[in-house]
Image (cartoon, rainbow, N blue to C red; front, side):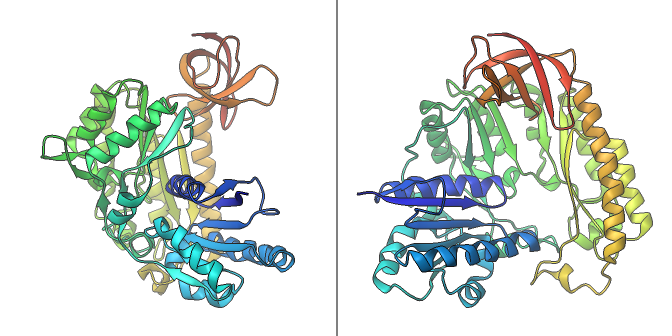
Length: 442
């Protein structure tokens, strides 16, 4: 009888990709997915360490699982991902119910760790080794059906060392998968039903890999190769760093039709003084120039970004400069957060911490501006016909939900369309976070 597996994923899209690969790998050794932890033989919490609350949520979840495990002592609990990498010893100390702690570069060794845990039945088994190339070499080929849109990790790690970020410590140095491996996996995803490929990386536009011609390829060259695969209708990539927005990548936005006119390009702040304290190694003017060049190459491109408010040392004048950059650029989407100190990062020890009240007040002002821009962008789509890739059923009978080129959720009456179809949709109404469509043209 097959054992049951429940995987709970926290955080970024790369964790979603990793969870899918862990599930595929564990299916090969006898595990099948179950929708809840209640009847699971193995529970995997694939964790995020970017923000303090994300880590605490994991410990809370382990507490709930501990009660379940008391009734079912044969159940195994594994903590994977970035909390595992950053706090392996702390996880074992705070959560003795955890059987396995596995870092994001070691999850290909989960079957071996499970065998050890089943023999040991007690005591945390830890593997947080940093060898991303070994992980990708040893993972089995994807085997499950793909949805219309599929994630594909091409790059891991970060060499930027922003002073607020734990990624260099939890994911290691930048590593790029070879182009041949990426292209092969993309072809397999298309064979299994994907029409859109989303390329993932901590700094995805830092990708540099050996190409089929033996030369080093940039992300732009890889995108061109992927666009040539029969069946690839759409390409996206996330998350990017302004320092790695090369001229050939900017040009690809204007010349590769499959590359969607939507780019997530985090800036974090609009003040040069704050950017320097963050160790971002770019200025606000550099970011503005990149945006200008992107819009020259692809006039209909829409932008998303990330912002941190209340960074140590941020003054009211610095914050006003962030608001000014937002007004100048104009965003279709954005993610904004109050500064959250992560242990071990330089910013956590900075003596110039901004009071919580000021952080909260600034975040509210920034989000009011960003939300207004997003709603204005959505309203600007009303009356247009947008190509929508349908991904799942809607709440009503006969309704489907898909994504526009700009990553908006679009609800439309299906008609003759089905999941996986790419159809032109007339946009009739816009909400804060989604669009409503009318007639379809397959």
